[in-house]
Length: 613
Image (tube, rainbow, N blue to C red):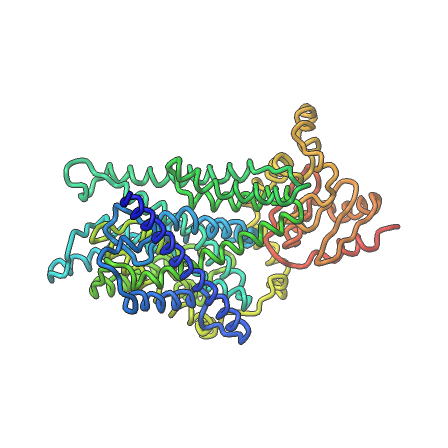
């Protein structure tokens, strides 16, 4: 009987402690939000909300560490979700899987769901180079430099445990995950050069996915024999195969889940939003349960859902989903940064070594430089729109570390090497967010980078011949895909696009009628995403530009379409490419990815406005 009473009291005390711990983070987020409002009210840009959250976390951590007596048995005051297999403990702690399964998915999903696809795809080649090849280069450079520091520590007797080359490579993969959320927020507010914004944002989105798969591949490196830390060619190629398999499998799973999220609950927006939310989150958990990487899966699920599923949602659900994931992203990101500040003082097994810390800072700068400058030089050889030296310097400066690096580092702190890596990663995140994030505005001014750039006017003053040539060079890579996507995938997977009965051969008529959504026949504004605002159909013109929509009858639209198409298909292609964010679609023929934000040709506007009544 006495044991039951003691057990009940312990459970009640644990519940109260858990509530108090959660209350600490809620108060931290509340204080952060109020301070953000004050900063925005006074237009202060020297500190982002993530930096504020870290500062408040540090202050609370100091109070918890030095102002509150901690019992010798720390486990009595930790959260019930604490990792039991790790000797490292926190005064206020969460299972690292909480970060991966609860806090990271909304952050990663929102990055894909809010992706500005037009600028992303226009710079896709460069973004892929920085994200894949650049991350691999950074990992190798950081790992090599850190291994030199470890060797020096071993010679001077500063090394207190085993630290192998695979550990150095793992550290390189962890800190290669950039998170320039502070810089991007300032870029968005100041309307910085759209090319720079697209390159940085695109790199950071894919870079996180590459870094987590790369770290998993390094952990999976297992040479044959007794010594698991020697170099083995077979094991190396096996790790490369694991990397490719995990990444491609996660990509396929995320894209497939995004495609099958085909809701028909438009009459009930609340149910529709709930289903969309659950399908999105389940993508992450499904990938992790199947042995893939949830971060990659949920990222490409977000991109796919933004492209397809978003068109099927009701207007109310479209607004709800965007606002919901934006809110979750904001809260989760600031929660993680608050926890970082708290962990600096409450983590019980920190290993700070000055030699390793200095070597790690040197390594991340060298790794970032080896990523940006050589790749930019090679990319400029094939780019008409060159990446300027000032933009390269800004990309080098904006290589902040953040939530992903922290989540990867805290996932395993069971050994001496992992504890040192975690402690050093915290210092790197603090330094880059506070110093580089706070110095973004000054660096933009120093490098003379354009601010206040209106994306709709970014190409004003560029000669028409040069503008068309640049767009044509960029568009051909995606023309075949977008033709296929517009004519077949969008009609099949959404309520948008031309009906399959107009794009498939006549012999496929019964199948086309079966697969085409009834709304596709009724929907006159066929593509409602950001990729197309101008649509030219067989029977009528619906011209949307800015806030105005002009419709003409079939006679006028037929004349306008004939005048627009002209005598040459190449001339038509040039005119289509000149539309920028506005696309010309002739039903059943082709769709060209817009590559610019320039004004639509005046003759098309005139044709639509002044057609016969």
